[in-house]
Image (cartoon, rainbow, N blue to C red; front, side):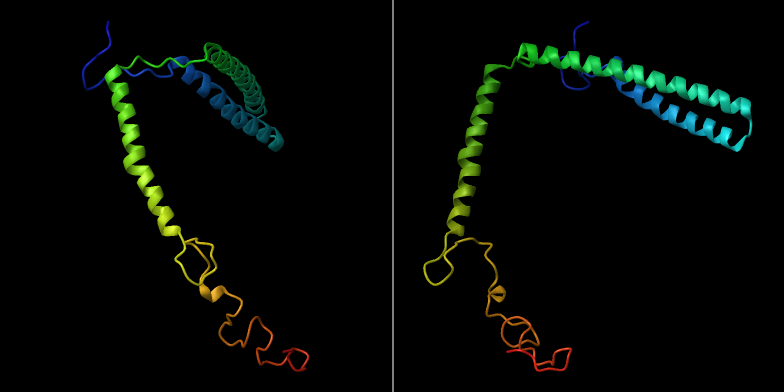
Length: 176
């Protein structure tokens, strides 16, 4: 059976059932193991239903073993896949038509020449400092003038807390 070639629902390559089971099985087995072990040891601690507690502990340890084995198999499969991928050096990409490649290159060139480059040049011209007094940094994100050293906040004379006009906590005159 050939894959569909028209628009609409098409087959998409996916991970497959084994890959999904390789991921889900260790996780679900570990969660089940934790649940069974907590319940089993909780019942043993409470000395209630000793037969059920023993069964839950046994099932918990079995689930933990299943989780460990499936995790190991999944890691080995992942390592093999990564080794195969790096041995080829290339990722299998479906062949593209030359016209599509030419259109893609033309689009990237137009994006660079008509979109990104004009934007960057505009940002550079806006960031250039106007001639005249100033700090000469030319950044459009320069500090506001009220953050300068001559700024005094409300209720303060001069710079900082000195000269606030209030007496010091020990009753002496404030330093000026």
